[in-house]
Length: 326
Figure (cartoon, one colour):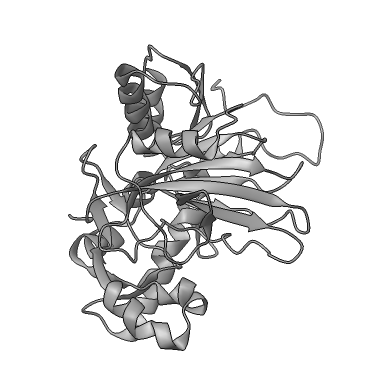
């Protein structure tokens, strides 16, 4: 008798002898328009990550293919090049990495992030007044969180961020988690039709969709000249790993080129929905002085806005990247 089959029960109301899944041969099936079932393409990456070895820290993995807490690293002090190199490798492998109990000063935060590249100055989010490289998200009774949408950061730039280092300065006791989605997995899980589509189409990205309210009418021409509409591929190849990932988000992606309006809207909705697969995600619960460092190409993030009216203060340093390409 197989492990999915049991001896008949004596109870007259129970007719089943096998788990419901034993009757289904497909990996994923359609149930009222939704794909349901085991996402088997995650298995290879999940198994690969389980074999990785590290010299300078211990790793606690979170999601199936994304997210890991690194234990044993002090970001507040000087770090040798070998440690930085291994942190960079962990970032590429796990897509987002986390650290606990890191009481960074603004100067230490900037110094750590700068070990991985030049830093951005964000024109549309206020900064820490002592460190312009740190954007400050200060939520309170008067300022609510609107980052609860899946997105890559600053895709309206010609060269969007490579990654970002986020420090929890003041966090609520409950709520306010940040979720991350593996965009390699999102790409690999596409239907063949959608995979062919994203591999052959580009999309336009626009800062005005999210930050238009930050720009006064007399500044719009100047800002548009400085940050014109940019075009990026719907799927891009990661410059460090060589893996292809989905690269589209509802905050900044405005339209798909070379298709009509209805097709663009329909395809964008389909592609945006890929981030909703819980199996592609990990979830991080913030504590004071926790740090998240994410690869802005390989993953998207979503800040849960469930803590109002409590205070949540975060500071982020973003590292300049390259122009996305196929």
